Length: 244
Image (cartoon, rainbow, N blue to C red):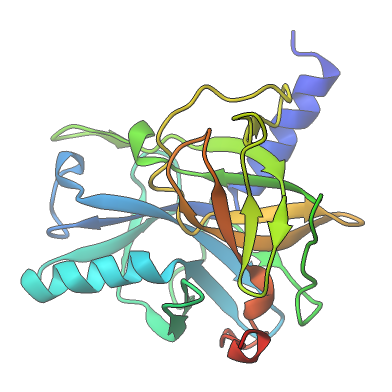
């Protein structure tokens, strides 16, 4: 039987999982899971004005590059368990290479297993050094795919913001222990986290609040960079005036 701590953790992790999912690029709509080229992570955000899909600019740029070479290339969102996917040609609202965010308007079906994280305060408050960060993403190292079946493994972890500037939040190693298990608080065994780009990150301020989106990181024992969520306006455009 699960302890009360484990039960609360599982409920928390499951709830945050509803606000994000894997976004993958494949050579064709009918391509089997084994032919997925790459994946990132997307976030679902609802501002009271628009429903948004958020990921990294470099994820979108990778898709655009692949599509320029192969017009059949698709970008798809995994909206449920297994590979319950929705192939999208998203309506781009705004994207910026320097911020490394791309924001799209949600114009798809009502997702049955996902939800939109509500944000009502704009500009979204920024976190400062020392803030505890929790995030969930889908590392490519945990992606499994055969000709007939596929699976994306979610990974839930956290760290502490060690530095903040006008563009990024840095979660840097402290004795090689920058990222920890949210469940145990223990350092994670090092593994490659490529694929979590676009993962929404949260901090606790009178309830869980959106803090940023993962834009750079290689392994769990290295530095992790997040783009500030504050760049996103209620209409989905990016506020470039926040940096010089």
